[in-house]
Length: 293
Image 1: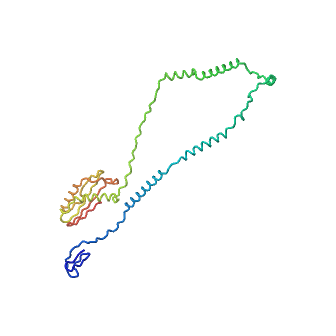
Image 2: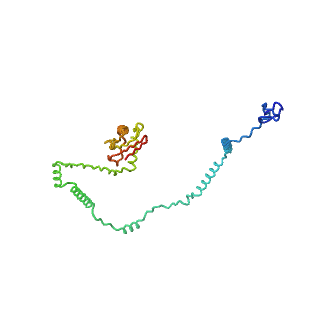
Image 3: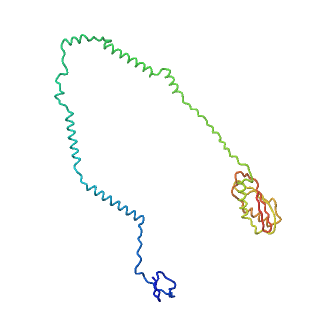
């Protein structure tokens, strides 16, 4: 609260000028501070309340279950089942006196019945005596043993062949294996094309490397010259020479210095096979043109 020092009017917010025209105010604390607004619960607080309520319900249910008295009903059921089984067993077992029979299982026959049985039985003729049967068995076993001995014992021919084999020395012929030379077929190189994308990219990079050593500011006047060279497999610049010299000595000197400053470059593409590369330089009072073919 703000109170005007002259007219004592109160304002909730500070005003630049009072109705009376005064611009000086005194700050006064509110006697009845505004009531705090009820803050709503967050999700974490709500979840914590729900978990506590659920935990309390579980404890109450467990206490109720443990407080229920347990009766002796199972024991009564067991007794009832035991009595039922006893009554059923007593019903199924019959009386022994009714089943028991004193009649003998075997009754001896009289003499008349035995004579009738003897008459009905016919004598079984014997095919051979025990001595003949034993003799036959021994003969069969001897014949079998002779056959086995004939199969096992080797003949005289086999013995001679074995002796000859043991007497002769074993000779193993070693075959001389002549290794055949393997012919490595080199892959065919693609045909050289000076205007192929790969060669054009290589020439542009080479021109940029040479141009970095080309001192344009040291040349005065105008002039034109040409050079040629080739590149080996390692990227070395070989067969460097002027094909056309300029009347401007400064141009010739800078081109010569440029050629000596870059003696080696990256290896050329596979299709390149030592073909000559030409460069042309044109200068006219600071304006220059450098081409590569």
